[in-house]
Every structure is written in structure tokens, then in C-alpha cells.
Image 1 (cartoon, protein in one colour):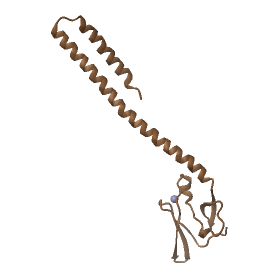
Image 2: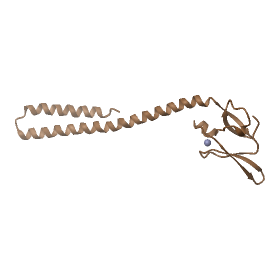
Image 3: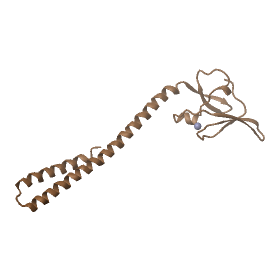
Length: 156
Ligand SMILES: [Zn+2]
């Protein structure tokens, strides 16, 4: 973050040394050359400070994003305690509010894949007729996870 400091300090030190040397000069051409050198050193310093300012803003943005993510994960760890993984159909699992009483069909079901990635994704139910299987229930995650298909809900 402060990589610019050594070069900025050395440029300023060089500019100071040149200014001290200018005070001893009597030749106008040497004064002009030395003044030009001071100007270049100051421009280098300004450029490196400005470049580091952009880098600093970038770091501040990253820190802010990480703080938001940290808070989201803290909130998630509290919220995830309210859910349990349940077998809702034959070999089919979903996260359901631990306090839920009643038929799994009526419960808000959360996708296990998304839940493990700290995303709360509600599965949407549809019913289809499949050749050889008859009527099946399909649960679809809006995040594109594999569909869950089963014939009957398990009893809660
Ligand atoms: Zn999902």
C-alpha cells in the first residue's frame, strides 16, 4: 500500500539537495538546469502519490466488500441454525425450517447444493407425467442445480 513512499521520499530528498545547491550557484544556465531537475523530481513524486491514491481506493473498496461478505456470513451462520436437512422423498433431500410441522409438500424447501454454498434458494415444485413412472413431483432450484424428481413425499 505504501510502496510509493521510498521513491517519493528519495525524489523529495533529491529536490531538496538541488534547491540547496541552487543557492550556491551564480551561473544562470546552471540555475535553470537545476530548477528543471527540481521540477522533474516533484512531478515524479506527484505521479507516484497519485498512483498510490488509486491503489488505496482499490484497497478500500476490497476491504468494504470483504466486510459486507463477513457480515453476510455471520448472518447466515445464525440463520442456518433454523434449518435441518430432511429426506422429503425417496432419496431426495432438502433443507426445511426445523420448526415446520406438517406435510413436506407444504413446507418451504431449500436446495441442499445452494445451502452448502451459503445461498438460501427456494425449490419450486411442479408435477409432470413421465412415461413408465407415472405422475412425478419435480423440485427445481432457480440457480440451475440438478432437478429433484420423486414419486411420493416422505411423511414428516
Ligand atoms: Zn440450488
